[in-house]
Length: 499
Image (cartoon, rainbow, N blue to C red; front, top):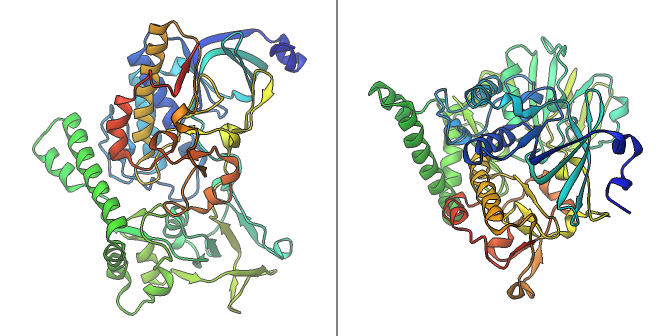
């Protein structure tokens, strides 16, 4: 049976549109991919398919109060487009920046919005991916020689909310930040925000002034880095009237150097780094605040992502009395709020579950290879971007300890180089496979939990690809080595199979 015959009749009947490359998603990674294709491979036909009605991904769908980056924009911004705003930026500022990239590089005509891919089928005979897509006017079909997956790693339509006893009895509103209602009225209300990550740390100070009171309820603390939302080096260079392109490169290099040193120290001298981080919190909350209980995590720095708190706004909210932190576990929901395991109760008109993402593997698209459904968890990753048994496909999965976009840019260079190499070889198919020397390699989880262990990954590890114990068969968090490794990847290494 042919691949087309396995699709529903409505999909078979739709006209087929073909592109050399199809980019999935018009977020920060997808817009970057479009730029790299336009500038490095202008002869390549491509389109970007985006399920939403606009570009931006996270920065379009997240509309909760105060939404902002938790990475500095000198490294989160693209390497090719200078960032001229504050290091920590709002969603609106990031969307404006991305819009400039689209306009300056004539990318708008390459993006097709409101296109949701439901199925993707690879044919080794035809050397093509066939996509079934729901568009504004119904079913559309596309074929492509290469899929560039830039859809991210979580579901935009819904966040992760645990099931707690008694939730059905609660009379107030339960809201997840990822689906924040535009008409939610929290003025003068008692609000509890459940969570301890960057979203909670952003949301609490953003609403504190308008609420009767806001409580951050956390099961366990996380690390934060408070500091001024400015870059003194960038400001000095601007005073000297240095060109913005130079400023971007210089400040970017300095930020990456500092991040590398911080990462190294977090591993080699975690006690010292912990003390420094806690001193930063104590500077806002004073010596009498219970830092040990509410802001001292159980893990060493950088085993989970560390969010920057601009101007210490979260801690200023706590110090002012408009916000408070409770470290405890939820026993159950009640009609009027929460019963905690300690016996304490929290009254709440609104409960916000800032409890993380719902992982989405390859955009929840039904993948098949030569008629066989793909089980992504049975594949082994090649440097976190290619997968055994999955031809002509790249997935952009960025860094946790450095800015996501750093890896997106590097993968952009790699894809363009790989496509050029295939052209030179006259190959229409490429996939990765374990080499003879990898036969006895231990295979384990995608991420080593001893190295990095956020809950949204740990609870979904069974959905993710497997990893080996050799660098090429892992997704590392080490940008500082990968920035040298990626440009030097030998495309004729036996790990690559061409046909």
